[in-house]
Length: 466
Image (cartoon, rainbow, N blue to C red; front, side):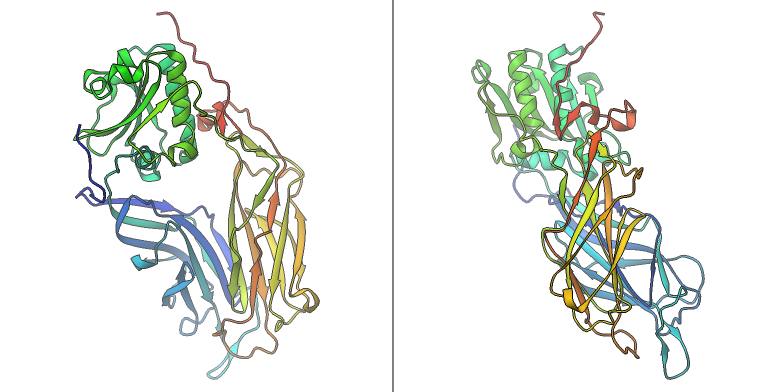
């Protein structure tokens, strides 16, 4: 058995493009801002990160006074002026690597001004002050993959990674002519990583041994009864270890990295596959081998569908006059979809130096406007608004809540170059979602049709006799 040292990386440089989940969106106002979120895998050694920005500004915007500024995780790092041309423009901006975290917030601020004469700016907000961000705006990474550590947790992180799945390097393998218990165990394991699969990604393949075609860079979950394991994998686990228990064990080779899930009985093989299907357990297991007995608690703590989803776990603060947007992704359990009766409850604060006749907050779900509320000096230290999602609005099980602040200052006569005024979205802001079970038997819903509240439902596999 060959073990891979901690911190080693594959020499080959890889690329991965992560698209933002935004439709083409227009931000209106002389000063606008919006946020986008993306993830950097922990096992990446990033060499280069590029923000590919597709945008368009108003044809009436003055290109010598209008500008766009980018911030990463609260740190400004790049500003530029739109080019003198109509239509959509593209801008590739390299991100300073030291600003990258696991989960990242990229903020786009645009100051779109119309020039009145040689001395003054026309700062009146009109329909001609706008910035449009086109769908397809994305992050591109050039990186090396850090070899997995010799733990279940590290293998699981690689196996369920977005790039691993998109590049079809994740595989679930059973023996040739698998028995029902092996098929059921393989499908149970598949449900555990369904959170990493979307309709935009390739699905994880479940294949038989003959069709495995393992190569370096593959992460292979091999599910089999002990007597049906290939010789090379069987010799990694002693028969004594599986007499009364199931075994989950890492095995790294030059032709792919394996996680072996095996047992002598159908019941213990099922228990081991349930352990793998539990992300909480897999991400907590910092050892190379796990022994599973009938007493091992393998079930996920079921998500109680109380329908409350916190929008942000930290106070989300925006600064500057004009139109600003901040976005929050809400994801329901895999087998649920929204129903009538959902609402957003927003708690927020804002500065007192506003023109309260022209300042307001507006809440959207995807592109549906829920409503607006005027800001007032009396409630600047603690305001709230509850807005209902219109009846008949279909959102699916993943959607975006967008909060837009229009912050107008008193007697502003110059371009916006300050960080006041400000507004904050508080951590007790939430969306209450009424949901119902989604039972559509579509291939695009696979494997979530096997799920119930983010855990696997009762699962049986039926195969013909011949």
